[in-house]
Length: 463
Image 1 (tube, one colour):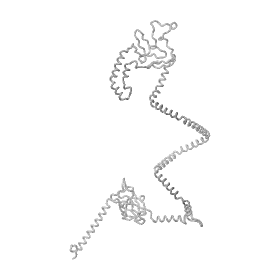
Image 2 (tube, one colour):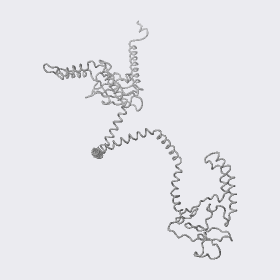
Image 3 (cartoon, one colour):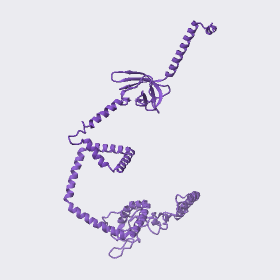
Image 4 (cartoon, helix red, strand yellow):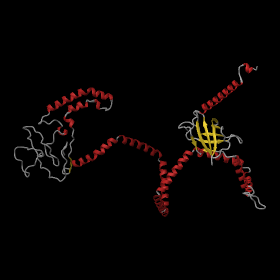
């Protein structure tokens, strides 16, 4: 009895066990394949050639394997390559594919680029068209290109020589060798300088691009304004002809200007200190003018009015200026004293003086009321306070030639009768003597003849 028979394994049972093991292996392989490919990103890429690309070849990103090629199908003038990328590897939406040859003789792999950083991703089923794929040049194409170049430069091509002469390429090499002999360092320096110039241009590429854009804008503007440009050129030509015709006068003027500039330079050099001090003084004057610009504006505003009033105040008949000061504060001295006691107005804006003014405010207000009562108590219609005529409270009683009489002045009963404004007061109850036998008094002198000169209205002080 064999060992298998001792274990109870008959041929039939062995066949069943082998079939079960095979099924387990197949199921495990299918499961592993499904798990690996489940969730993978499938991509279809089209290349113009598919040399060295097979099913099972690697799919890489930056040289790292991330998937495999599933199928390679040739079509009319292109090759369709179906591949998948492992689950979890993200691809950019703008996907490119390139065939890469790691060595001269080996299978190729497909490189996907660029590397995903952020933004939208490529979904499963993405198609990469031929304009987004790259295929390396085949070695036979390289050899064919070299052979074609050698034939073009050989004795049957550019280097073809006449009997007894050298070919053109041979002459070129001989002349180049003679010219370059001993100039190795100069060539190296030239190449180094060219490298630096290229680096400078590369570093300034943004500025160069901006300059080119500016030139493009300028040229476009010139093209859009071609008529104006032509007119400008014509006018410039006329100006050039005019300057050419007047070149002698311009030469004389420039010579005189040179002489004048020389004199000015000598003057400045000899009077440098004085000019410097004058400029500094002018700076101070300018600063004062700037600091007092508000007062200057007021002066310029009031000066025409003052000049007009001065002109109207002139009496051509008597040759005098009929003026009087208008000082209203002198008619109320107590009220003026109360106002002067407000120390806060001495320094406006000063917090301490403002506090003093606020503290004294009730007292000063009461002072003003008391002063008003006193002033009103002593002021009567028949009593003229001192300097009343200067405060504007009263006008002159007598008529002055060339002035405005104003209103009727008050009088004291029994002393001076009230007279209408513009007439002189009566000196007595008797009739006034005739002009032939008596001299008129100062207050009763005849009025001056009327003049056509206009008089100012009685505002404040009458003329």
